[in-house]
Amino acid sequence: MAEDETPEVQQLPEIIVLGPPVVFETYEKEFCSKFRILRPWESTLPLSEFLLAHAQNTNAALCSGYFLLSTAVLRHLPSLRLVVTTSAGVDHIDLSECRRRQISVANASTLFSADVADLAVGLLLNVMRQISAANRLVKNGLWPKTGDYPFGSKLGGKKVGIVGLGSIGLEVAKRLEAFGCIISYHSREKKSFVLYPFYRDILELAAISDVLVICCALTKQTRHLIDREVLLALGKKGFIVNIARGPIIDENELVLCLQQGLIAGAGLEVFENEPHVPEALFSLNNVVLSPHSAAFTMESLWDSYEITSGNLEAFFSNKPLLSPVLDK
Image (tube, one colour):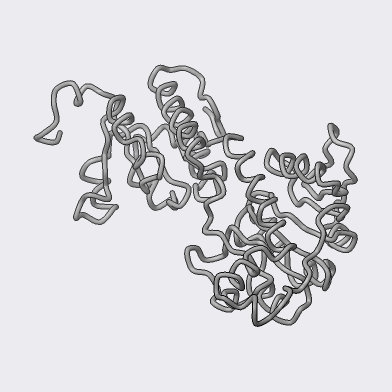
């Protein structure tokens, strides 16, 4: 027990915070009113030593989507029974180890789907109409010298292939239909509740599409799913947007295809080795970049706090989790 803790705090359910997540930093006061918080990032001890010294009896963890909750970390948390991540994706958590140890996992579920879909459409419009490039031209005082800016591409009527028709993919499809786009998709299985054409072969989808929007989860099967062959099938007039996970695209091949004009452009919210981004992309006017922040709006942060704290409260009250990924 920390010396400065009150008896009331000592009676609160204990959680360890790993990351820490933005939602915890924003609503720390609210979390502290409900839980006794272990803060390993404030300690001078290496994480493994901190866990051995302070977290051997800790039952619940709150972790950021950027924190790698590996088998090595889990090994130092022998009493852990719940992991709550603030992200929708769970590729940063060793789910196999959690399943083996019967550790429940909860995520943000579909909480961020609409916000992420909004940014996907924003990136697509931006790169097709060259909004950011035109903005730089005007702000740099080059408009009087260069004259009219080169034409962009129209979004309406384009054939859009969505890779991964989950909650985010469906929200993207709904928005792009309003622009008059023609939607097709690739997914693990055909969805019985939609009428969009389904392509089991990603190459076939790329070949008939003007745009690919990547919305699928990162798994062993989807790592580098978008390789050079898929990019070449998309073609010189094709655009790609990735708001899923960076490693789904072979980033080296993407850079080469953009540099060589083998695809028309890219809107990228995620990258293979975040936060590091290939410098070759910085000078390309047909590329729009965003720092993996699609889910972050002021409104979504409060919603994230509510579902995160709700999952933790449900666990400590022996009630069903609000958004389980794995449950005992």
